[in-house]
View 1 (cartoon, one colour):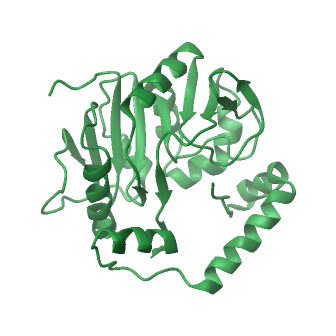
View 2 (tube, rainbow, N blue to C red; view 1 turned 60 degrees about the vertical axis):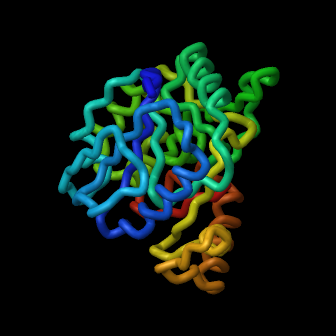
Length: 257
C-alpha cells in the first residue's frame, strides 16, 4: 500500500520496556491496521520480533529518548508521536486524523494534540471543535498524542534530552516560537496512559486481560494511586504557579486526562 507522505507515526520505546512495546503493537495492529502513514520505531536496542511491520526501525543507544530521536530522519511535514506505554483501545478514524492535519496546516500549529492533555477551556474554533493552549499555560507542551509540525518538533528534540524535561520547560520555550498549540475537544486518538512508575494502570490491566493477554507487570497499588490523586488535586489549585515551581526544582506531577 502506498503510504501517505503527510505524516509519520513515530513510536518511541526502550529495550527495558520491550514487554510493554509488544502489547502496544498488539493494540496498534488491532485498532489501526489500516494506518495510511509510514510507521517508525525509535529504540535503544533491537527486539527479536515485532508484532507490526515498521517502515523503519531506528536504533540509537542514547539513554534519553529525545537524544535517540536526534538519529531519526523525518521525511514528512508532520509527525504523530506515540509512546509505547500508551495503548490504543478503539478503532482509529483515518479521516479524522487527516482532517486534523489540515487544521494543523491551516492554523500554523506547532503541535495539535488529538486529545485534551491537560484540559483547557480556551475555545479556538467552535465549529471545528478546537481548543487552544495559550503561551504560558501549564503543560503547554506534552508528549501525549500530539500531531507535530516536523520543524517545530525538531526544535524541541535538539533543545532537550528527554520528554519529561521537554514537558517541564516547554511552556517557556514554546512561548518564544510563533506557532500555535491547539488540541481537539474530542478524543480523536483513542488511547490510554497504560503504565505509571513501571506498573500497569487498572484500566490497562483490564484491557490486556480482555484481550487474553496476561500482564507481565504489576498493577499500580491503591496507595500510589491515592498519592497521585492528591498531587493532582494540588496541581488543580494553581497549575501555572505549580508548574513553574516544578520546573525550578526539577520535580513534578502531570495531570491525567
